[in-house]
Length: 98
Image (cartoon, rainbow, N blue to C red; front, side, top):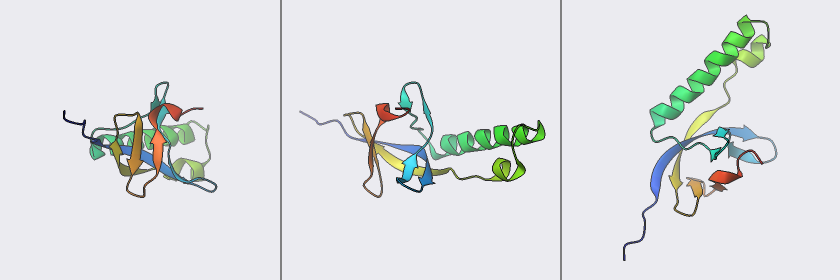
């Protein structure tokens, strides 16, 4: 019997003071894993455009609006609902938002 092979994907991460590098983009189903690096990059750009518009609308400070702290990390998606990055960090897709 063939074992399922892990799938490659991309996740958006940020650096935190206490947890180090962690995934940061999620929805009601959990962390979002993008199929391509370009799709993840476009999500970062979309978020950045929203922050810039909020600045223009007077809802956000300039420094906060122009700062981009998110970055794309290649991940391996496993059949058990986890994904791992190149540093061996493992996250559960469903743990997002808890």
